[in-house]
Image 1 (cartoon, rainbow, N blue to C red):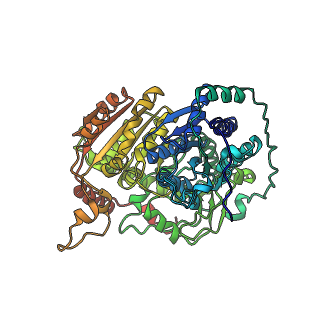
Image 2: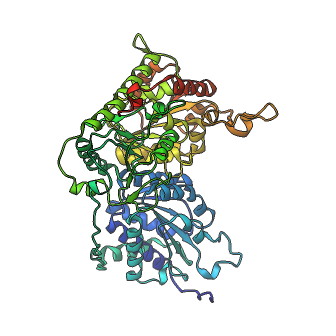
Image 3: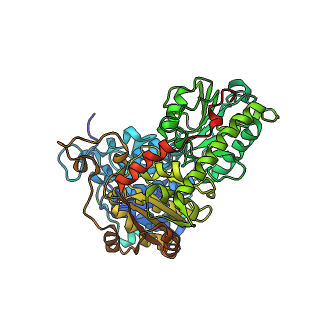
Length: 598
């Protein structure tokens, strides 16, 4: 295909096109735009700056990777896509880790990358790469502006492009959308051109309204069609992926099912359901299903959402040969990692329950649930007895930290768990009597990229957040400390609780110890000679060392007075790995779970 010729345009024309695109997105619902530095993206930057006066929250960012994860935090918190604007070249490549997580984790995200026109592609022009292909495999939709430049597009075409991108980011399953936007020179509008185009935008009468598309209603499977609520079974709930505001109606629907069926609920630590009033939850299933504990499979399973993190729970699900119904909240993708679901439907739990008949749990179902709850209660008592002596917490170990933090954080305080050990420790050791709170993490692609920046995005959206992170995950996103001023301006707070075990503690828990001829530390743990408190101080972040868990409450109260603060806890990863192994062998489940009659 021949390269299209140059399109004559002015800097004012480029600004007009950028204003039309962003103004349309804002009218559709765009609230926040994270702006990365660049020259090719200048028309988008100026347009975003002008639209601040109309309520668009503009957040400058020097690091594209951190910027994309900040926007990811926004989208995870409220379900509204935030936009990230970058210049051309390698800047676009830095968006990929966040786009991967947005894809797998079903988070709406809008990427707007400036580019050179087609006539400058593939001919050695500076800062020109095949950026239009970088993100495509992970995006719900990818489109480009006119190859001659955005200024060659009419207002109607620009509005249609924005409208389709917005709709694609929010269509089931929600996720990332990439618009690659060529701009030909000149790029930098004069003050007079800016005034003229802003006045034109204010007076614009472009009206676009899309009538709601007709959606064919699908028949909803009824409860008795797949599962029998009058017979014993269990509910397994994975990480919550929908907007935080939708968790309450989901929990109410689950309460309705439990009151009808009597089934115990095994809820992942990222489900947001732990501590939910009225729900009968099994918190310690990962320990109850531990080494040497041959708990019988459930006669039938209701599985909600994606797969929980616990491998022991995954194995237990795979061993359950009875009917399994997998329901997602609007995600039609295959989420049956064990391959054992009898059926998967995406219409959501509440819709599935519409035809549920009235009734009460059967005696056998109540006995099955009671056995699980008794086993969990016994487990919780054993864990408390291990770490509580005369009311004082013993010195820091990672499992005990998760338990203490779950009780000390204020009710409803949002929490983000970094991947690897923090999310697993929370799942196994957080206290059953801890209050309910929204909990977030990377259970899509389970990476450590952008951990601090995503937590900052959550904090800005929700008002406050506590992040529990390991040292390597925190180091991986050290530029996330730069969000301090943005948090302060938003009157938001992020408290970072750092588990510093000098390397990758998760590898201590895996059977990969090398022989004497190889260096495990260099190959896997990769400890860094770094003082995280000093590093944070370099970014202007106050830090406090916590040497014993009885100091944690005061530390959290101190951190709550800062826009961004670090609580630094040093632990021994080898000793903690041995402790976890010991706990999984030493915490036997209640004998009732083995009873043939249950």
